[in-house]
Length: 169
Image (cartoon, one colour):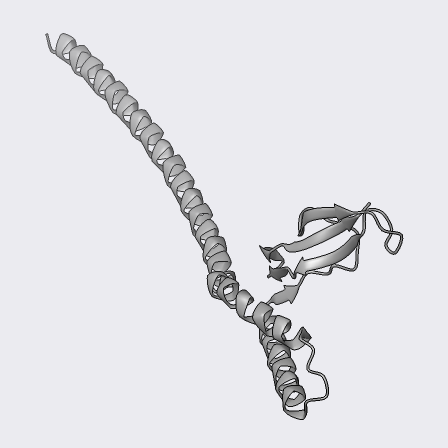
């Protein structure tokens, strides 16, 4: 009987070893799966972090956009006042000079914060110009801007306000 007990004991030990190996294999697979999940989660976190940094940079870059847009009518009004005829009146000429200085200060401040005037001495570009009319003229080539009704501006290379222009036919 002792021989049978030894064989039974050996079989039990083998079964127990097989069970332990299966458990170890299952634990190894679980550890590998957890490692993969950790790597994915870390990569996702890094991607989200980079995206948020980009979005934050964009938000900071364009934070003053609405404020700048609100100032455009002010500079428009100053330019209209500057273009009025003052004649020979010395006081009117001094006022006009003051208005021109104010316009120059506005433009310098605009440039400092990335706001620049859209060029209108080129061909019509629908991305930055808004055609409000067409005229037939011999003075300007067809397709070019013949007149500007309202200046347009870019803010960090984004259209703040398109130029309102008349196109030559």
